[in-house]
Image (cartoon, rainbow, N blue to C red; front, side):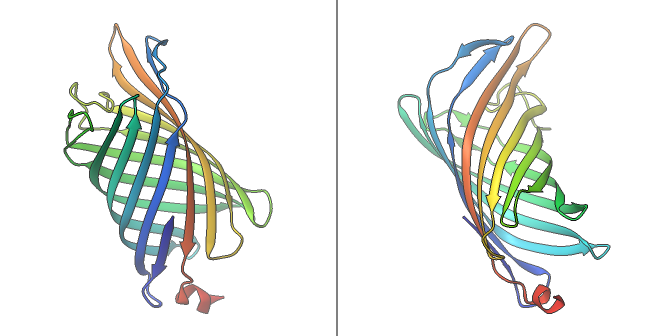
Length: 232
């Protein structure tokens, strides 16, 4: 669930998000041959909280900038249960561009730093910095329902051979597909399929990759902005 709002009629506000995703499958390949397809239950819960700033470029293109603290809880069954918590900080900028009267294009650029930690089995997690770049679209089906389709790339400048979550600088490729229901201006309900492709290792002799699909649900509550109400 996410809640966002603004302080009075200013362009500054607050943002808090808690979401949950469930991995529906897992597959590891070496040179495009499956080496691990162990059934895993992985519930991942994320919390993001911090200030936001909103501005309309050229008076019509909504730009949102957020600075967030982001902890992540993993509850993994493999088949022995493992639980661990990891902390991160991030800054993200998101731009919405209308195309025609109904379709909207979405662009997001994010800098994300995961701090050192340990997994539930005691393996060390290094400090890792990512650059996330997302482009996608919002396609209306009706007044209250829209389809969502996004492509996201993770770049990892800090990647090295000791990392557990991908060792290549071209680290991940994510496909987001789903829909959102907006019964009113305050509430938005989202349901999305997320397919994560992680490049674990790539050399002249070997290419190791992980496919990790998941389902994510989210409820967004947007507190009415006095400034926007006054402009209507």
